[in-house]
Image (cartoon, rainbow, N blue to C red; front, top):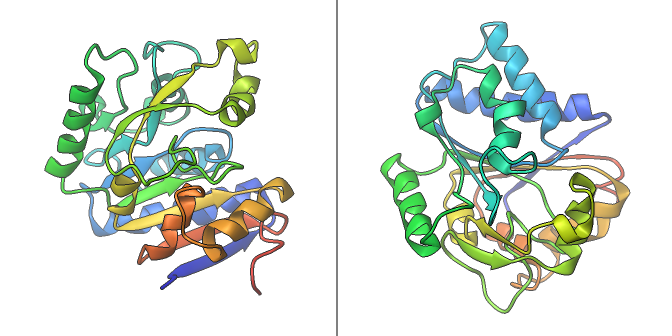
Length: 246
């Protein structure tokens, strides 16, 4: 049964504030909570708002732990397009979260399966993710869980589709520079989060958003598994929500 709370916003700033409200509530209720984070342009207003709220004394990140959804394989943490560097520059360097309390998959790990197991174990040792931030790809992927014939459960390596690499080429000089593989939390890892907050903008996401929440549940649309999650908040603009039931 679908448990979906939809919040419609008009601007990226409104989206950032609405998403920050969700994170602030969790952090207030559990100061040592575990937050699951995502990268890309859509979460940036949220991260700016979280920074501003800590500076205003409304949130305290000093005990918070964070786990990121994914990372490109083959990129060093200080590579300009690595997700570790993205998080440092857009959030971690500006809040009181402790470096040892932030984990991002290691794109340079010599033994990727062992690293993935350790990543899962760390999240488990922390008590699981309390609130997970998500976006959605044009093909319905969450994290880097691409359309396939099954739902990958745990953190794992994945080959990126041409569509995903094309969508991400704007961050690189050319599509040839976009890595061909990544490490991502599995669908099971995402579904284990106690609460999910999804942020989506743009008319180009309207069709896939409808498929994710109101189409058949299938690994060919990985995000459709969220129909079985007990607590999903979708924050989107009117354009993205165009096909959603009123």
